[in-house]
Image 1 (cartoon, helix red, strand yellow):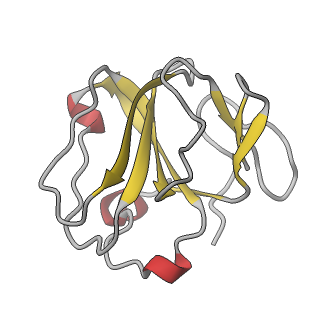
Image 2 (cartoon, one colour):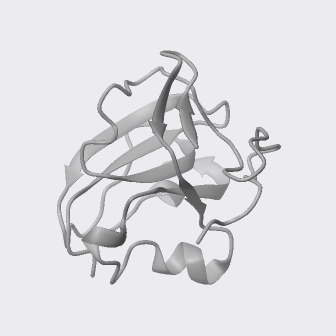
Length: 135
């Protein structure tokens, strides 16, 4: 679950963690829009603008993307990022990024603090590495 600690509201009920190099490389490429009903969380190796740059090649539907710093505070949000956008770099350095179905970032603002939990055990994730990928 992705939770907005600032507003005390759920953002989305299910998360998937891009933990392996393949999962991080693939992201949402070739995903079907009707299957994308979750938040895809990326924990980056370091907090930076360049490491958090994303593209939308072979993503066939618009998405919302939330960028967070190492304290999980929102530093940038892009809504309705269009398919095949060549690149988007966040305004500020980010340690995490979360790809969401279009419209799911509504209610999330810069400065808000987000938290994700293991969807099975309901435990807060530790040290920026959420518990396990959910398929």
